Length: 152
Image (cartoon, rainbow, N blue to C red; front, side):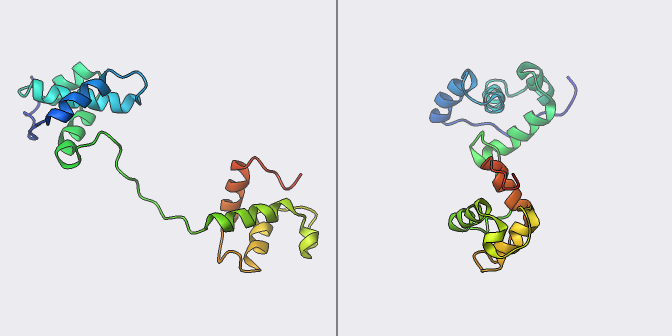
């Protein structure tokens, strides 16, 4: 068989030996978690198998087998790792105030515009210091999520 032998020993605790088979046959679990559980169950059952053989048995590529065999001893979880991103800078109160602002007309705030746009809404939201700074795209995303269209 091509490829080197796996370097990462797979040792499952009794609790993991109970939970992983249940997850690997589950029909309501996400398919990625089921695939990962199947990969992790095959490893201790067949230690001499190379990654390619395990991948064929699970019906996936070799990379996920390598990744999860390497990651399992460190994390003990079949969940995805946390992804990079920034924390939210606006509080729920600031979001509610911005949405209330979008529900009013620009003329009610002394502006000459006939209707709101993302940029003008951001300008007015920042002016009374209800929000320190906010991107027009953030306001548009909030409006889309609320299925609100202040321009109409």
